[in-house]
View 1 (cartoon, one colour):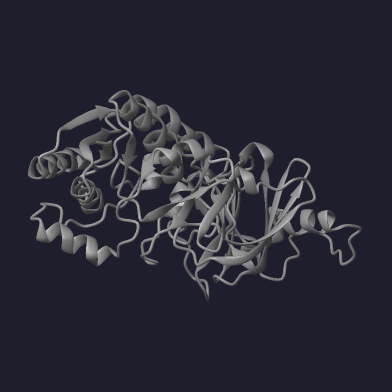
View 2: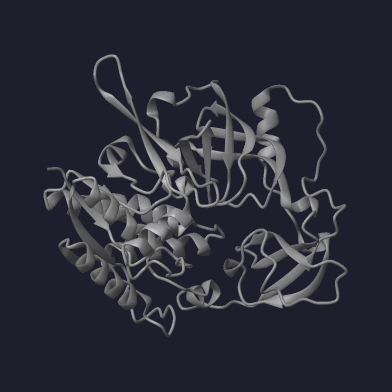
Length: 396
């Protein structure tokens, strides 16, 4: 009998994943990850993990499976929280959920599961795994989007490797969310009607500015409003000597100076803000709401523009360096000068958009057919061929 360790989070998805695996004849062990108890950085007055671990225990007892809690808070702080602070300090916007999957659930947690003698780990993610048998008998694993378009979570797993996928099961990937709740209710699982968790992976609710302010000190600076007709590239160029030169141009970040606009307010630190952000600026009196179009952490200036259609928010192209480039399917990786037509997204829940990948020395350009709003450094871009997520990278 194959042994599976399920990451029981105290939510309905992982509860039903454990139930389904038991029904399929696996020997199932429930493991709850405790990832946070650093009192120096308060998350919220509530302690969500206590309630969650209790619910996970009740589900395990109901299913008649062994249950234990593992404390991964040291690794979580080092690999996720400290990384987040470093990235925000540099003016980038990290995605802790993607990192949490790569560094914690499918690395530290997976290793613990294998030490317990498990053949696989399983999670309650809405995605699917495919297997291709090669001519030599070896297997290549596919990361496929979840059957429920509204809940597809493949994006959060965009950094997984073949090795990690080989040891992973996604029992609810073929189901719709309402079906999952129905299974939980039919089997009298306490999590059947529990709301989906919000906030950081395994931490629970967190108000990001307050969270960041506990480590990144406030630093007063100005908010500048830039008119929509400012040429933020400071040059016009229509003719390019090569496709790479054109891509480098369209991928270039806009550069603003205080004299490009007018000072309309103050902020407590450019590193608390991210591109495309609207809330928290506290500037009134404009015809349309202000959006952050760029942050300059070295000069501590936030540049804003009126309305979500401000041209400063839009670009066609982004770049991923070789260091930050990851192929879930290494057999499909592009060589220099190689291109690939894909569908891509730059954030979770964004509709997939047509794009072309161009591999160059030092990295890879992702060139979208349509301009994208708020391409944000530090976030992940993921690209798909049909329903398969084949690669990803950190936007630089």
